[in-house]
Length: 374
Length: 233
Image 1 (cartoon, rainbow over the protein chains, first blue to last red):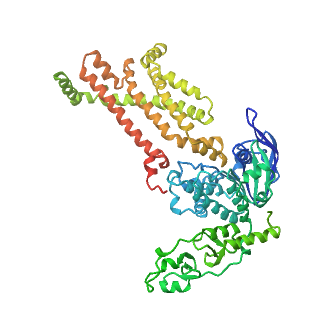
Image 2 (image 1 turned 90 degrees about the horizontal axis):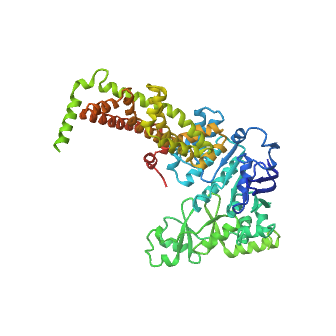
Image 3 (image 1 turned 30 degrees about the horizontal axis):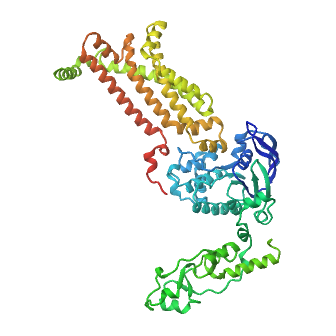
């Protein structure tokens, strides 16, 4: 547990970066500090591992004031990931990851074998071990940064805008990976970002800071979207917050309708026989969707020929019937060429279809039941 | 033109004369003397300049000292300094070495300071945040990353000292400068030219050696030609 008790940080010159912060981060929780630049979120984070010291107040980890004792020893027990990864350019990927275990006194062999495990854990190929940071992409560097922070298995992980320098597609992958890691490792994570979408996606609890280092609201993401504490939070959370709130309603309440499917390798004639309203999803042997077949494209083709992939429409996004949410279901429906969102099970096999209207109906029911505020 | 060809011919003759290659005043002895003065001066200068540059670069305190020292020392007239030192201390190894040390310090100091200072701040922040103490940050992160610039400073210093160690002969300490000075006094221009050629050749050879050492010592992760190979997107 990390506790901020009346913490104020003033910089030389008198500017107040953090103003009387009181906040508790629970063990094993994923907490995100979010706010515009100059709001003191990074300063707050850096006071936890004493990269900065508070001007007033104190910070406790498991009841112990971080100010007592040696900062270097404190930091060995806290993983630290920064914006541009900050990998050591002169060391290989493997030796970068092995840094903290080596500092903690492990033998070189043991530290390297541990580093190898970490490399795999963050989804990098073993062939990366001997590369140097300059040979990696931004996303790969950031994975190595996370692996390096986790190497000595610290209970706490501090992440300072770790994904803000990578492109959006890679960022999304890294976020998903981090959530997967957290579900396995159960660390206490404090994560700083200026991106409210990232905060809401990752955080179990989100602390919104405003300029001047004042904590504006500290709540679960759904609460933040439904009941912003003031105009600042409402403005920061943004225009799309109604749409984003759909992400907190489970998709399991949606009725999954029937969907015409045909296995790949079927003939044109066989495909045309199963079409429903002119559409069918082509699936592979495991039931995973490949694309959509449409009547107008099959018309005039040789009925005995095998259905080839270039006759298909690319599919839209998919959503998981169990475990997914209304936002992904709505997106599946809206992005599907047929207007039917494809529902899949945990293995990615097609289970049925959902219409945008079904999602809206489910939203209306949830509102009636008081699950969301209108 | 005839004069130039004649001079070159006599230069070749000078090098071909076996008497110039043996004895206490032969080329091998002079080369060794020259290298001795160079190595001694560069070594002592490195002992002073590298720790000082590293300290200033690491702490960020006293950067003005580097600029002041580097420019001030560079502006000193080397021969004038040597004569002054000889007048103060008498003829000997010490004044010559001191004069050469003064010459070698600026490039070493500037290279080390710039090298340490230029290490990516994010990298240093990460090192500290992971639990490295200040000395470990300097030793394990800043110095290895500064190595290309430190060795660059070492090469520049060595090159300057080799060419300037010629003045050792001016105060009767030998070295390759002997050929230059004696040649000048006796109007033996082939000998004078031979001295100059030997000094330039020695400087070139040592430069090549140091480039090789640099390639071996600097981490492949900091060498552009290695890094470019096998890059993925």
